Length: 189
Image (cartoon, rainbow, N blue to C red; front, side):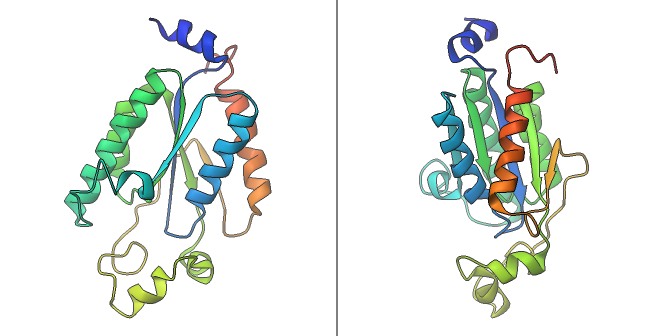
């Protein structure tokens, strides 16, 4: 089957929306709410985050730099397969290293769209929905991105949202508009 046949059946192009950002920047919140909105609009979409991949496919990986890179490589390959099947794959992973994100971009090819949630460490720490920053500062979580492990911000993301200052609904409106433009069957880019 060709891409065009799959896209015609789905009534949209397949692709990967790769959400990256610090812990607490809103990746999972936005990914799952965007999934709900797109699904309600009749689009074929699936959102992935650490909770639904680290406990299965990537259960054998830890949080060393090498394991983090392998985690992202695997996710990139899975997301590319989803995109090849005509789905919109939304991934919500810190993915702290540029090289690992580049590997995911290579897997997804022209269907890959990097979305950088650019909230500052201070904004994410103030939000800290799971209490991880506090635990990392006490030394209870080693290699915690933004505290004791680096985050390499994207240099040329297709979309940047400052989730530290923007409301969730405003971010979602921008994301839905982006998907409508970039995944429309009549779009050439």
